[in-house]
Image 1 (cartoon, rainbow, N blue to C red):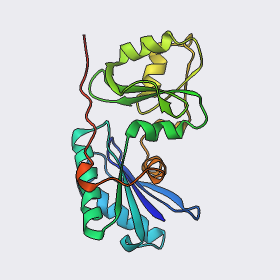
Image 2: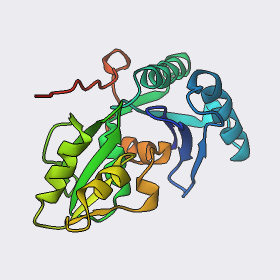
Image 3: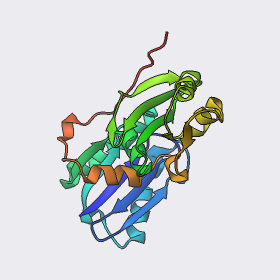
Image 4: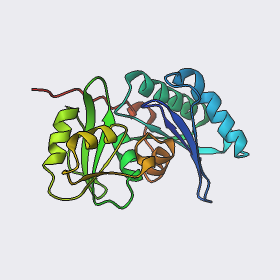
Amino acid sequence: MLVLGLDTSESPGSVALMDDAGLAVERSLPEPFRHAECLLPTVEILLQECGRTRDDIARICVNLGPGSFTGLRIGLATAKGMSQARGIELVGVDGMAAYRERAGAAERVCVVIASRRDLVYARWFSGAKPRTETVMMRVSEVAERLQAETRPLCVVGSAAQRVVALAGSASRAVLGPENALCPSALAVARVGAALRADRLYEVEPMYVEPILA
């Protein structure tokens, strides 16, 4: 089964293809914050490079967020359009789970995604299972929680370097693999390939509002 992954939750966006025979390729969009113009042309380029066509795609997996409001809408609209036009399975993927997938075998993981100004999206995992809901917090608040950790904690996501640096060397938090510090359509595809297909009308972006004192 050929799976197409789409991630326009942050900048840069990316697209990916994977199948059961070992294909696993990813390509970044050529222009930051120009997802609407670049997404479909980049999909076509990747298909051509792999000797495939849109008719070969059996499933589309798209990052539902959290992330950029506009980026998420563009990615989902593209995924829904392709799914409806060609009868392709559609799967919406939690972006936090996609980052967690790239953390590998780490037992305790914190995913931290950059938002606006001094805010980030954060979620904690034990193994593959989330320990918390996805919340929006100040960078300083996440750093304080990392400082309070008494056991090793792997931190991944686009804001991971920032919060780990602020937490300081005394923290038990450590940065995850380099490829887990930026969004990945291939991770979205890998997570989505294992999920049940969604109904087209039920798939909506995940928006998280700040809960601030």
